[in-house]
Length: 190
Ligand code: MN
Image (cartoon, rainbow, N blue to C red; front, side, top):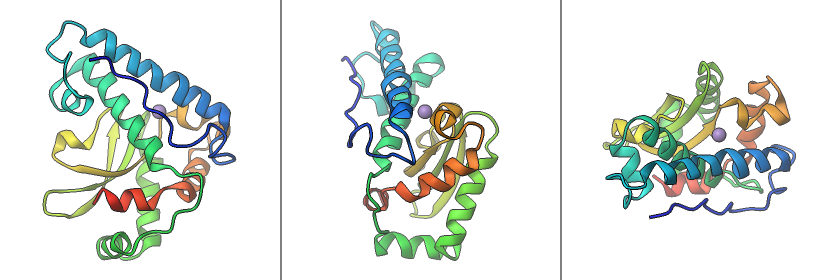
């Protein structure tokens, strides 16, 4: 099957000023598109040709894994953001407070994980099979599904996610993007 670039759930200027239209033009329109294009090229005639992206992520290695996982991760990332403020549903709030002590503490632990990740990668909130929550860092294209964890939210900390708008200030990007997380979507994934 040919994989297509998933549609953005909002307009290219909808996340401004947190994420500018120029960042979306490059991050969504070029980086994400390139992962999709590479994936389509690499799976042609391979055992992965007819698999959904999630199955490829779970089974492939090397360049096919990297491009499939980056495609999955970017779709999940863009789906996690919202142009308007979304209040955190109670079910999620209770679980986060139970795990991290308070929402403020969850935020500071998540942002610490995202800001201390060395190089390119992703910071995730995950749920394990017993329902326990954890903050997970992954390098490059890696995805916590391959460790048996269910992703609930993610922030992309590759430089291409913030360099146009924030230059080297990853912490400023993290502080700003926190305000456009769609907590309703995060809660739905529980
Ligand atoms: Mn990215």
